[in-house]
Image 1 (tube, one colour):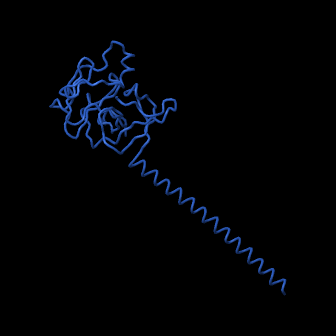
Image 2: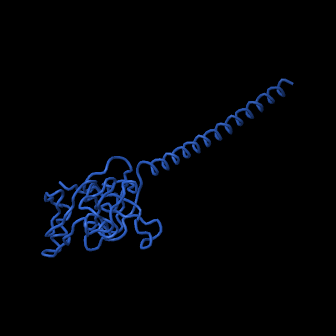
Length: 211
């Protein structure tokens, strides 16, 4: 009789241990699933409101950016002159669905922008564009940027950039559809700036500033 009770007790102990082990396993699985769910939600939030990966399509920002380059879009911070920005294609009829443009800020709100003899003038002062130096070396004596003023661009009735708007251009001036074609870009349309290339690895790093 004692042996039966002892055997029953041992069986109950084993059953209890197995039950605890099963419960511990499911608890661990739930913890992992919960952690994965939280990580995914954080990823979506970061992607939507902070940082977002994007890919360059086309040659319009050569030599700074090349077709296939992968960048990180920063949705935070202010917009400064010569920043590289991202915005939806403003000419949907001539663009692919959901296409986005990557261009450089040349004119800030209130700026007077003039190109004369292949040189940029901002509010009457000549400004060097160092990010074009390698392209200028390639083109030698060719003109990169034909002469124009803001009165020459679509829907402009002033020599100055309107408030709340920006004048943008691609670095590869002869291959870029930019503000010279579609006019100013509203601040509300600019999704963010990009200064970090993550691919290809041999050119990964921060984009050169115009200093």
